[in-house]
Amino acid sequence: MFIMKTKTVTKLFKKVCLFSLALLSFSAIAQEEEKKWFDNFSVNGSVDGYFRYNFGAQNDNSTAPATSFANQSGFALGMANLIVGYEGEKVGFVADLVFGPRGEDAVFLSDGSSQIVNQLYAYWNVTESFKLTFGNFNTFLGYEVISPTGNFNYSTSYMFSYGPFSHTGLKADFTLSDKWSAMVAIMNPTDYTENNPFDTYIFGAQVGYAVDNGSAYLNFRYGNEGEPGLVGPTFQVDLTTGWDLTENFYLGLNTTYLTTEDQGDADASGFYGVALYPQLKTSDNFSLGLRGEYFSVFNGGLVDVIGLDGEGDGNVIAATLTGSYDIGDLTLKPELRLDSTSEDFFADNDGDLTKSLSSFVLGAIYKF
Image (tube, rainbow, N blue to C red; front, side, top):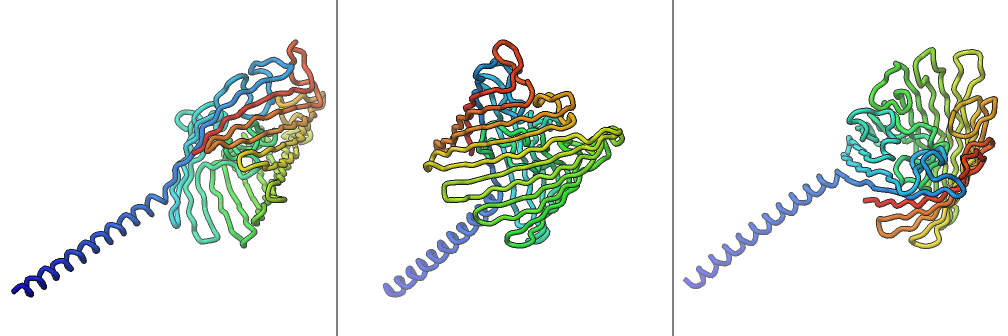
């Protein structure tokens, strides 16, 4: 009887153990599936602010380089950026929200609640080499981007400031090989991200080449950016490339050319420019980078950006030396900038116009 009781207890113990293991396995599988489901979602972003000071010029908001974002005097706000995304096997979305002055400047043609929308798009991976994106997305042209986390320099270039910021439309990305890619798009007029008030469209295209130590992208856009009959078609070609020449030295290059046809008998107007971005990593936490930019306007292609002569021509050379120091997820970016124009443009301390402006910026960026 003792033996039978022992066998019964042993069998019962085995059943309990097997049930417990099955329960634990089911729980582990459920947790694993739940984790994988949540892993498809991502939340990240940044906050930033800065201090800017002019040397030998008035420190008010009227005296600053005519480039985007870091152009206020004293202590100033950048933006808070919140990006929520879902990346499924075939489909996904990105909702990129911005709050603050930098965000307002980035979505300047929006109104109402859409003032906080920087990007809002859905995508479909049709095949492994073919992807469709529909909605509002940041531009594919140029070297610099809206988010301060994506740029080495805190202040921005002239080419970035007067190129497109964002587009709304449909684009198709193609993976041609391990190294080559292509993209074509049809979009609203540039920066009209909420709707299309003109019944005209912009066509975009890109050819890309990328390997482990660098990449190069040749970008195009063409179309009527305003009311037909009042504004002629705009054409822009842009080359963006960057390479790790050594383990600690990087060199980037951006060059662009934009022209808009005149609706009358006048010559086309526009601008062109080139910028070099050498960067040296001196330690795990500190890097030093220079942006040297030449930017030229012809036939009044832009106004109130740099000084122009009587024929509407002018140019500027801008040199920006930036340090980047990482403290965990916080990055401090002190920079010295010198802008020198071909015509008098900047006001000195006496209010007289001069051809140059020296300034200092300290940017602080926290990313999460």
